[in-house]
Amino acid sequence: MALKREIQGVVVQKAGDKTITVLVERRVMHPRYRKFVKRFKKYLVHDESNQVKIGDTVSAIECRPLSKRKSFRLSAIVKVGVE
Image (cartoon, one colour):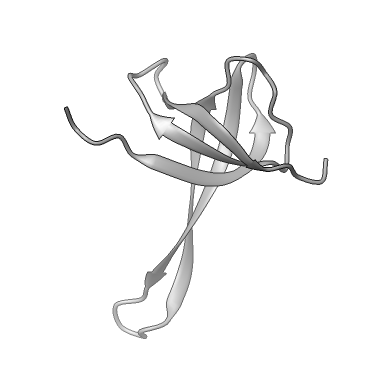
């Protein structure tokens, strides 16, 4: 069995029923300028109980494809946000 990827990011949108959009930020070194730059990507995450609010920091784990773009499910709420 392959290892499951785990992502951590901030919830930026509640996209329909049982779905949240998570913004994941990673820092990579620029190949020429040797400076760390931020790279962002949005993932759709399955939230079965609709318990997450916008602004929360969450952890998600990879699972089977649940829809066209959704292949992560909510693992834990790391930190509760402002809203």
